[in-house]
Length: 217
Image (cartoon, rainbow, N blue to C red):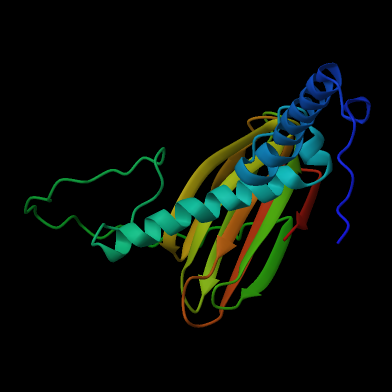
């Protein structure tokens, strides 16, 4: 039986070549970590490459799903449903008995709000989707969304070149409205997920200072 010949010393790589190969491998690993892994897994994009390759958006969604899973686990252990940290929740004191106020005269119905865009969509059980507004820093957009047939979990967030932000999160919510102010120039909007057992219909309405609105997921 023939075994291959043992290589001679001249055929083996030198110490200098090994050190150079090790350094090149280390530099390549760092580049991949910063340009690919951080944007795709954590939504952190210091180089801006993740935005070009749409990896930052993937990482932001993954982080939202991870937080959502933690909240679901907490709910199963008896924790109350609440909005994410950063949202102000006020608790009003118990009202004291007072004499009923006289009935106010009937007022004419308020003029109907004229929305610039209206986007309805349906989410199957377990399905999620995302809609973004393209906004400049400081721009404001009024919004309203309602759920028909159930409730959803949501994450209001934004992303731009090397930047990302989460404005508000909620679980088991049937509607929301307010004003979204862009913290920086980029895409700002909402991610919804249906955690129920039946399909739901969501209708988003928006108007204000944005140049484009699109469903990106």
